[in-house]
Image (cartoon, rainbow, N blue to C red; front, top):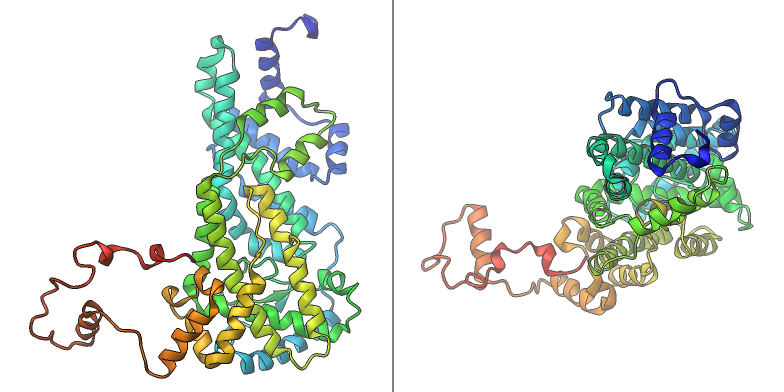
Length: 469
């Protein structure tokens, strides 16, 4: 039967047979085309084997994160460059001096683990677990969308087959997404300068690192001496790592807000079907652009807009503190202001994290309020000093929120009153709880009845629900 005489059902069956039938492989010409697309041909063979196994009933329907790592490492290690002994020595010296300077600017203690120099491939391996955690909700959404689209578009007489292909389609969606994740993380490894460069806690707790392979690219157009640039970048990286090690709750706080946003992402099935209807396998550029641009993700909902605003405020609060502490620690550097402005501009116009998460989960990580947050932290430092400022990271409820960024004067007034011993008026419940925790007997008449909030449910409310982050 000629190809043009096949029915849609027969074409569908032939596609399935070619993709997932026994022994189907990509020919050398196809593999060459994949190499030109910056996709590892060997990795693509692994994709095919994974999907064939799923079709044969051997797959578990999960996402192959090993595939993502392989793709990312393929891109990260393309130039084959490592860290030279000279680069390592120069950056070790910068880290050593930055540690001393930073200890003069903040009361948050030094790291227990020495900072390191890291290759691009090393950065991929160290950070990929966090990228997987952030991306998995959307990977699941894509897999669900493919399953639903298959069920809706398949002919009636094939619905029985479709109903049994849920695991297969989830594997297809997961494999496609894992490949895209690897592409993004691999490309990102060529851009990031340090572990905290993207503003979110990608590195393991208490670890700081600089990527010498990307360090030169960052400073190429700044006309700043390399030793000054290294000192500034080392100081900023250490400040970021110290903060997340000190406030151990902060890492989970940031990641949970991102994943909460990601769980609300759903694939635009209309856009997916429209793209599939005109997709030409010999011209894969359109599909690649659609995946990278997030065109298959619908507009954000009101709930997601609110979640994004909370996340932006949180990241601005973090980066504002890092910015202020780094500025104080590097005040001896003649070029510190120029470097600081380059860092802020790089983040404001959309840094590596925005491109990465924008394509993966439709989330832009632009700390739009970083300047306002930095102004707040400077006002706090001037008013009460570094120790009281840094103590605001001791517990989540103490951390400044969006209202404090809007009105730093109110925050400063509260902190100054506390420094004078003029604590805000505490209610009876707070006093009774404090005495109970200290082992004191409750005062007569303290029965818990008639206390503020006892009859309005406030006592059961999470403090973080009371105020924006």
